[in-house]
Amino acid sequence: MAGFSQLREAGWLYGADPTLPLALVRLFEHVDGSGRWEVRLNSPASEPSQVAVFDGEGPARAEVARIYADGAQDGTWRVRQPDAY
Image (cartoon, rainbow, N blue to C red; front, side, top):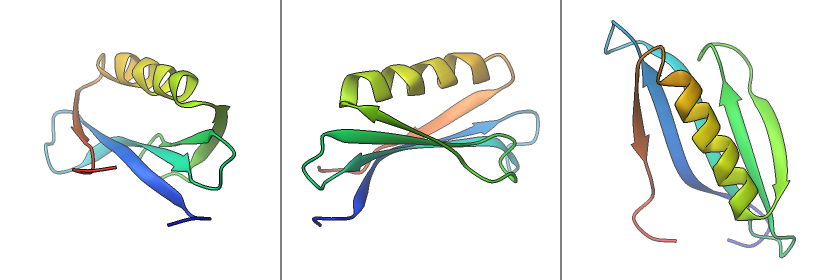
């Protein structure tokens, strides 16, 4: 849908308690023709989102990969991607 950011990936970090997420990261594509992508991180999960905007998918995915690597020291990520985009 033009004008709205579209969710492309979401990851929840779980530690010892598999029902309580430690962190949440989401990857959005701006579909306004700008080519921008956005990473939203809640760490801890209950805190407000930290937002970073990137010019292109590659740099945004690199940041998400860095977040996943950092979080893997504290637990396990459960990552989901929408079926089609």
